[in-house]
Image (cartoon, rainbow, N blue to C red; front, top):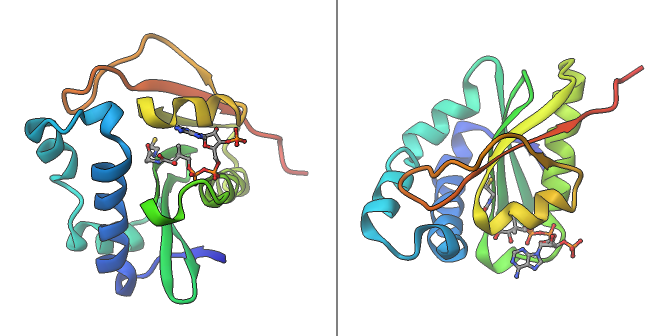
Length: 158
Ligand SMILES: CC(C)(COP(=O)(O)OP(=O)(O)OC[C@H]1O[C@@H](n2cnc3c(N)ncnc32)[C@H](O)[C@@H]1OP(=O)(O)O)[C@@H](O)C(=O)NCCC(=O)NCCS
């Protein structure tokens, strides 16, 4: 598996990974509620993903194995992790851990002192185990019961 910058040519497959991951893995968050799902999925379109891949001040990364995209990660250069989604078939193989490390490395390279993110209920324990802590109260997003605002200080790069 390699992790590399996404290109607009990845948009269709990367978008499908985002959508499958939300629908199939995040049921603790959306509880199969069609209203929550439609809000959450609304901006996950191939055109938007292609635009994120070339947007300035941001990075969009894909984890790829044998031509298949296994995970998609998004980051602002200021250190906000905007997406971290794994394909359902690639879950629990270390792919999201590798993606998170790549996103943190990229943020540090851009001079960010910390990474921040809004975690799903589904991924909360994953981030706690990887050095993130909750900051502030949980806030529902898209109508979900809870999303966790989290932060992790980064090691300053010499
Ligand atoms: C939870 C999730 C992020 C983990 O990604 P992954 O690629 O499967 O994770 P890895 O294989 O790198 O690491 C496995 C970790 O998942 C967590 N985990 C294990 N079983 C789990 C379960 N049943 N439910 C939730 N998390 C679990 C643990 O933290 C585990 O790490 P550990 O074995 O060191 O304790 C992923 O499976 C998932 O459900 N993603 C859905 C999309 C999402 O919520 N993304 C985050 C948006 S902020």
